[in-house]
Structures are given as C-alpha cells and as structure tokens.
Length: 157
Ligand code: DQA
Figure 1 (tube, helix red, strand yellow):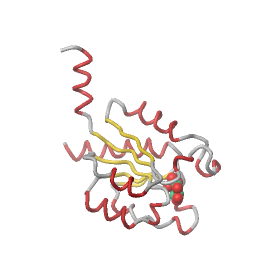
Figure 2: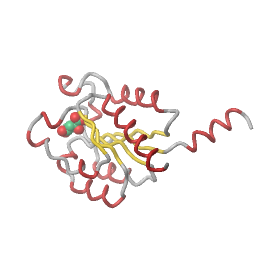
Figure 3: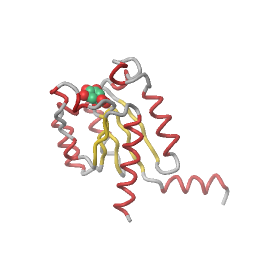
Figure 4: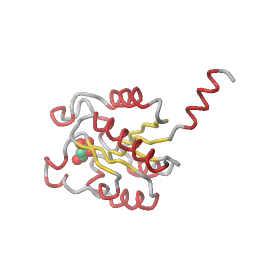
C-alpha cells in the first residue's frame, strides 16, 4: 500500500469531532479585545489543528444562525467542543437538543463568565457538559479539545 493510502486509512480511524463557535464569535480579534483578546477564530483553528491533527479529524464551524448551530450538532460526531456565545445564557433549545442527542461535549468560553455580569453566570448547557473550560482566551479551545479527547479515549478503553 502507498504511504498516502495508509495515511488516509490512519486518518479515517481518528475520532471526528466538531468545534463549533456560535453567535458573534466571527468578530473575534476586533470585538472587545480587552475581554476576548486580539486572536481571531482563524488563529484558534490553526492552533488547534496544528496541535491535534494527529489525534482527531476536526471540523470547525462558526455561525450566527441558531437553527444552523442546532442542526450541525447532529452530524455523527464522536464529541464536540462548543462555545455557543450568548446562546449559552439564553437557549433552552440548545440544551434540549444536546440532551436529545446525548453528544459528549466540552463547553468553552474565552472569558471567565463567572467573573463577569450576573446574566452571564447562568449556562443552560454547562450541566450537560463533560466539563467546562473558560477564561484562557483561544487557549480555552485547545484545553477543551484536549479534555474531550482524553474523555473519549478513556470511555472507549
Ligand atoms: C463567550 C461568553 C458569552 O457570555 C458571550 O456572550 C460571548 C462569548 C466567551 O467565549 O467568553 O459571546 O462565550
């Protein structure tokens, strides 16, 4: 078998995970940089892809449309890393869908929502998550993927 073919085979065996950023996260880099930092979503994707390309097949998405975000979750993923943005604090629909799908996920936030306004303290989704990582800027995604892959590896052992 050619090297390229055996590489493709190896990649196909890796867990397929979704990294999904929700509403307003397309503005990362220019949105309130004192809170969210100067890095962009593209920077985050490069960081995560570089670190985890050999451990997972990672699909990155961002949308400002809640129904799109909900539909994407039903994609046969082994697990997901979710930053739903403001939907974290508003979306019972997102919580219901995650319950229905039984999708293992890690919730991530760039900022530490517990240290911010009171309306950001409640998350509809955190209680359903494997774990929550927040406050580390784009590194929250990195830590979130690491946590998810560790969780998935232990579960299938
Ligand atoms: C956020 C925190 C949310 O409260 C906020 O609405 C966001 C971003 C974060 O990553 O820190 O849009 O999810």
